[in-house]
Length: 301
Image 1 (cartoon, rainbow, N blue to C red):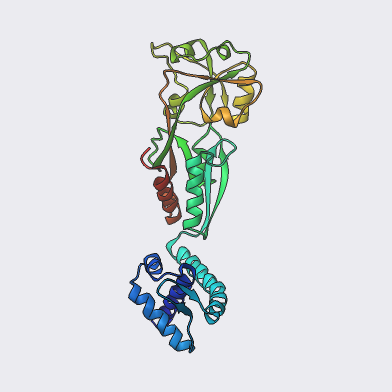
Image 2 (spheres, rainbow, N blue to C red; image 1 turned 30 degrees about the vertical axis):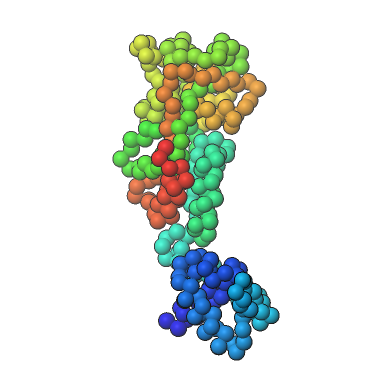
């Protein structure tokens, strides 16, 4: 108990030395002004000298106070960093968290970058790393354990996977070769896909593929499927050659601005909704903490 009191006294002294105002210090530390005053007087009695010069208008550090501030500040920060590290380990919010996303940029949207920065601030003992997910096989990295949390388009209806917060929605575009007839249009409609051949995914649930690349037009015409792809590079090469087209979300136009590709809006396609997804059996406090942080930033998308 004595150690806790002394640590609190140090915290009060350092805060007052920075704020130079009893009211702001009390508000910052969520204590009363009387407690701040009592703590400082106790420390002054213990040291045998004044730490602050007090006037009716302001307070400032005395030379003794300045010396104490320099000596205590570095040590206190190290102590609190150590306490935070041990506390994080005890709560399970320390260690490596591997995030998976489609595209070369890790969670490249502004809100998600902000969420990652906030997460690192909240949980300094946690580390984040990124793995790219292949669109033709979006669930494989989760199932293999290569990633802990994946950013995926919805729907995801797998009994072993948990759907976390929805992060954003994106317009759906058609990726075509620059010389494809559709590339000359301002937009197309879903019915136009009946005149095209769409790439097929290697390891993707039927319903996830259909959300971006439907199997039938609105009138019921079947949409032809081309070669089965297992990697995004294969998709890009096949589309660039003109053999197939592929539905993608709007971010991909920025991720892959290749000269041989064009991205055409599909004006009647429903926007794609995206969310965090993880294995239910492998859920950890670190995963929950990350999902909560993302939810705090993106709100109710």
